Length: 399
Image (cartoon, rainbow, N blue to C red; front, side, top):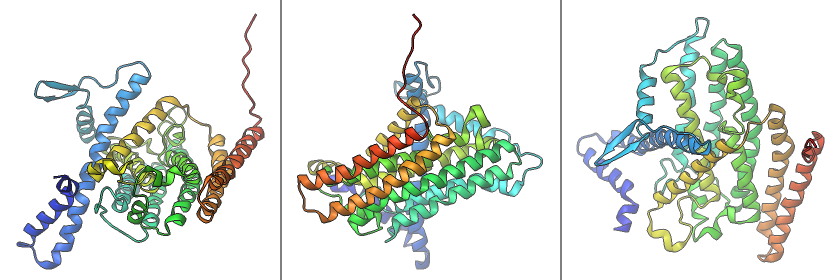
């Protein structure tokens, strides 16, 4: 029963293919197989996006001591899930709202920009191992493919800002591109240590190398934990999430690069942003947290794809918690953090990973690698604060 549930999506796909083979010519079967592989991606992750929009608003409401969505519900026997029908109402509203395009806008580019945001995010899921034998496109260079398609988002952001013929939209696009380029470098460098240790760019093989329990996960090593932390910060910036949401800072530039978008086009930008966030989270799970493996061998009885989505859920709640907790950075703080702190530290983690690989296992190795990371971390952080003249905050009270 466990094995049946484990491979249920794969078994279902092959069963459908067997039926289709009786009606379709042989040359169409590979196309049908590809469609069956991508259909779950097109259904599952947009559904997670829809539910996340409600969960995020309800959690932020709880953090800020106010009600979140609590009216539109889904009747389910005698239970009414108040608020969890809100995404349906939002979707209907986005579909029927008027599509307003500025008179002077480049209408073709303005139309293509939101589509160009969503497509790279969906392509990134094709190389993520969602479960055992559940990788839509198992490439030998899967990590490289992930970053290659992800970099196309920068072009779509520029398309949106430039085509709008709006100074706020263009300013937001320039901010976004500067931020994405700056944090893409530490994001990629933070994964180099994992690639060095496993000797492969294949996401499937990287997950297989972490089998056997959480102590085999890369995040369980000193260099891996540091690289995972840096990856998490860079991924937050790449996804334009708080505290790195400067491209769409409402108090300064209205809504950034999608200021001149309304209706369903705006919803596509919203969708693309969250899909990119989920894809980054999936890559972090794959590289550092064992992918679809259970934390303990005894828990492998639970289907692998359930473990993947449980870990994804933890990532989503973490990003929601960050949004409700941290204030927005200034632009100079954002750039200084990337170039003066994260880039040097990611390079140091690569060296630390190499030392970990060639030293004999034991306490000495752990202590040496930890010191290689902690000492530069303290020096770089102290230099970053000293250069800006930021000291310890003192509070003075009137007598």
